[in-house]
Amino acid sequence: MSAPVFRNPVVRWIDYRLPVFTFLNHELNEYPTPRNLSYWWNFGSLAGIMLVTMIVTGIVLAMHYTPHTDYAFESVERIMRDVNYGWLIRYLHMNGASMFFIITFIHMFRGLYYGSYKAPRELLWILGVVILLIMMATAFMGYVLPWGQMSFWGATVITNLFSAIPFVGENVVSWLWGGFAVDNPTLNRFYSLHYLLPFVLVGVVVLHLIALHRFGSNNPLGIDTKGPQDTLPFHPYYTAKDMFGLGVFLIFYALVVFFAPNLFGEPDNYTPANPLATPAHIVPEWYFLPFYAILRAVPNKLGGVVLMFAAIFVLFILPWLDRSPVRSARFRPIYKIFFWILVVDCVVLGVVGANPPEGTWVVIGRIATIWYFLHFIVLLPLLSRLERPRPLPVSISQPVLSGGGYAPAPARAMDKA
Amino acid sequence: MVHGAEAVRGQAGGHGHGEGGGSRRDFLILATTAVGAVGAASVLWPFIDQMNPSADVLALSTVEVDLSPIAVGQAITVKWRGKPVFIRHRTEEEIQAARSVQLGELRDPEADEARAQRPEWLITVGVCTHLGCIPLGQKATDPKGDYGGWFCPCHGSHYDTSGRIRRGPAPQNLVVPDYVYASDTVVRIGEVGPAGGAAA
Image (tube, rainbow over all chains, first blue to last red; front, top):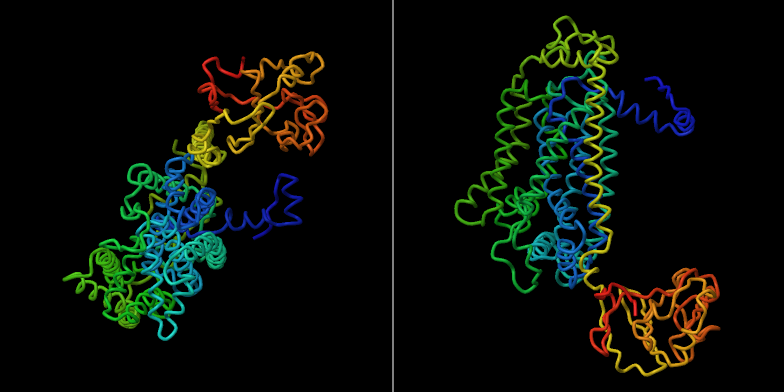
């Protein structure tokens, strides 16, 4: 790509010394993108927009929040009642976390379906899993800050996970707490880290984008682009497509914020934290439910904790578990079936996590947990050997343009009105 | 798929071509940008307004003071909206000094009668109108400046017994807050009286 010539002399002067405009033009304007991306490819940019939304609303909330066990709950209520538009900004932030996870989960299942984790995008995928882990830590600590009953007992249960570590578990937990129970020191450090981690997230997202732009986006066919006839410049084609998707998403986001702001929340969290009484039925936020179900599926403290973390860590080695050279499930008839079973399995795990660990829920939880690991550790390696994929198209443009393809630049004028 | 490719091709070729097509695109871009700008502004406003005083801060905007323990010649300082308010129980000489001044001599001409609802009680915001320091003159041992009122140590502004600026860099008199007498001995600072203001 040759350096662009900018018309504005100020831009030219700056760009000669500090080539930010060349960089932006290269990565956002002419950046060649597969021409066949579907709306499933909107969720990456949506996740980025949600990260920015969370940081902006979070900085505003930090202006009004008091990180102290005696004042935290009331300062949040003050935000809701007294601060100008505080209710709006808090509901944007609170539901923004749920939106961020919905988008990220769809983004990840998109990657699973179209094999976006396969060579040469293994590091891109691994960075994505790192992003998920940091997101989970940030969301967990953010949920503690309002200092309601669920905040307190969620913090107690999750930090107690670390007590399962042999020998040093108790020491690790009291180190996390800064005391003998979740208390003011815990709240203070969680607040500090909750403010810090989103900026770490920005850093990892930048790495994620650098890795993405190295080989460009995967696409629904899962085959490499073979030249300009297979790609479109990012702007205006995908900026417009992303903007349209953003509009649709914002309608959904606004519906939740304005009409059902506590849809994803737990009523118990509007009761101030009481270290002397646990609520009857405590559940984590919905985005942790599948992992929570895996934790409870094992009738052994250490085993449950290990398996729960393994459920995420198995994603790190996914590129080496699925050895099939074909990326897209479109050409993998058997994988496609197992993909959808996995989606159902994760939903089932979520439902199990939301229900009390009694009766049939325990059995269902165990079967779903076994299936989750079976899928990644046994079925995927097996499928890569046994499955017979359907023939791949020669190129992205070939099935569309039987005439052998054309580049978008010398296109005909539109003659239809 | 074929249909989609057609649309893309049409778009790519649409630039700069076709009479009417160009102006329709201009209209769409303009309309979209306008709607987007209105949307962005309406999103921006809550994020700006959240820094304005909140409802609980505004609710603290009046304070009641019992004047009965304050002896003649004594002054007290109360906190109102985070700022000091000077309440001075003026002596007869101080009232005389304040009322005998020719208004033409003053930098910020204002009659003492307009600054004190009852002559014996002078109530002003104790913040120098120069750059916001708190003038001295409340305690018996404080320097009161050359005009027997207040003296600001930061940059040397002198205020008289009516809290009016007489010398130094301050541009205006000490501000008289809204207040009403709830009874003979209780004053409520921050409340606008039925007459609307501090007129005597």
